[in-house]
Amino acid sequence: MKKKYLLYGLLIIIMLISLCEINCLNDIKKFNSIDSIEQVQDFLQQATPKTLVIFDIDDTLIVPEEKIFYPLFKAVDDFDFSDTAFVKKLKEIYWQLAKSKEANVIFSKIKFIPVEQKTIVLIKELQNRNVKILALTNGSLCKFIGIEIMKKLRFSHMNQVGLDFSSSFNIQELILENLPPLWGYSPIFYKGILYALGSPKGTVLMEFLNKIVFKPDKVIFFDDLIEQCSSVSSTMEKLGIQCLCFPYRAEPKVKIKLDQKLVQKQFDYWTEHKKILPTEPNAN
Image (cartoon, rainbow, N blue to C red; front, top):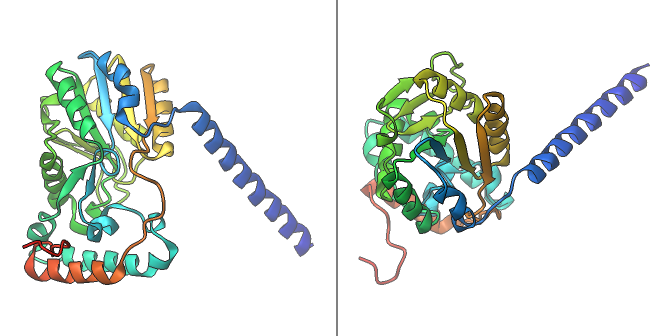
């Protein structure tokens, strides 16, 4: 009898895995992945003030300039298996730093660069035509430093590359209290950035649009994760809003290999001196 139940259980697991794989394949077929914003430049040029253009932040708009900060913004699975323990250790140290009084000072020193400079140019062109731009990010940094510090830091991180979406809507701050606080906080909106905080991005976007009483004619959405594209696409379809979703692969999706000795040296220097240790031989 036990063998029979074990067999049934195994069959159910296999069926669930197969369904997940089928759904993933369907999503891949449904969406056109891009590796450069230039591939959809024509779509963006057709955007009007009634269009809502949405970008994920990390690996879509910006990336940390130094690899020592990758563990803050990337998942453990993004790294080479040999670096897994090292990355987990760094994440734990970041967690401890976040509890210190100097957290805001330390984390504000992180420098970011654009994933593609062309994206920054196109966004500014859209803003000049009064097209509404929104950032929609998971906001996992809140697990390290809390929501109040995070929302201001992320806004400043975007400013580093010349991005500011705060003019898209008159409202500058909003708590979506109807959605569950999965990471200790309900999703929030702050100065043009919508933080999902663990909830599906489609659900958060729908709640936000309902809250501000705005229904765009079209949504154009960019995210490096195909499941988030699926979430936004299916939700907008329910609202009767035309939606174009593009899984964005400009940031290479190969496993990240770290020089652990160099990263550790940079990390120690950063935490002690609150600035980056120059990596170039002739750097000051």
